[in-house]
Amino acid sequence: GSLGVPHDLEPIEVLVLLNHSAPSIAMAAFQAVETERLVRAGLRVLVASAEAFGAGGDPFHRAIVATRQWPVARDVQATFESLAQESMLWQSHRLLQDPLCYRCGLWLLATLEEARRHLCVVVERWLNGYGSNPCVLVDDGTIRSCGNFESVDLALALDLVRLAVVPLAQASAERISKLVNRHWSGLPTGLARTSDEPDPGLAILELAAHAASTELRVAATPFVTQPVSGAVAEGIEDRGSFALAAARALRQQLALAWQVLAIETTVSVAALRLRRPPRLAASTQELVGALEPVLAAWRGSRPVHELVTAAQAILMQRDRLEQPVESDSPRHPAEDDEEDEP
Image (cartoon, rainbow, N blue to C red; front, top):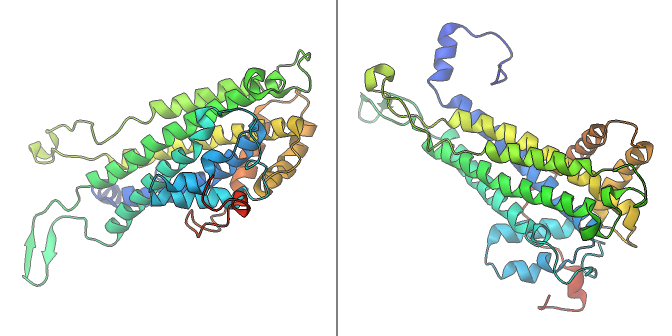
């Protein structure tokens, strides 16, 4: 059931699955695709959240990112920039320095994207190679015992993604805290219409986001470090990578990360309804247009999770992987006046 097998398996079929890396590779491939969707959604949410907070755009400037000499970060910045077109981020400076959860948001997404790309390389290598035992050497006319099934490289690549998604979720939860607290956002606490309302508004979502982020972090324990018993097959099978367990854990973590991003989307749109900046990024306008009617109909008398569920559905619908996080950088809005300086 956990593998999503649509029908009952015969005992020998179960044995084949348990003794082969194919299930691990297949699940890893699916999670690589889901991680790409999460990165793209994370960029969209970061744009909306930064606009809702009134953050400045300097940390996301192409020239700033280029100083790190990091190709993946440049790709991520290009996608961010395309999503942020028409935004006032490049002119807005509400605070002298924004919290790190905003300033470093792009770097956290770049880190996850780099881990995802490494996972794709490993999965592709497995799909195009022979990973079983014994190995038939046609040219030699021999059959030889081997360890080609060793999948520690796959488990390590999965663990890398699982670790990289943690700070992404933690930063998202911190941005939620900043948005729903008046001290940071300058907006009514809980994003209620006025500070005098007894209704806490969306403040409860701060706890939900940090709870999901904590659960995600606890689930990030690497599997490649786990011990293996030497009693299997009379001590012959004394190795194991737990790649399948790592792929299943990543699936759980990504589900939690989607929840945190959905909460950030919800509070961002609510904050934008109060802040009402003169101009929004086109991608943010889409989120606001889709979620604002849901927020308007929600008067606090309905379960708040309905808002988050709606936000997650909207967020996932708008991420169709129309293009990868790799593209030629569009012209930066600020570069109309400045060629090299942020």
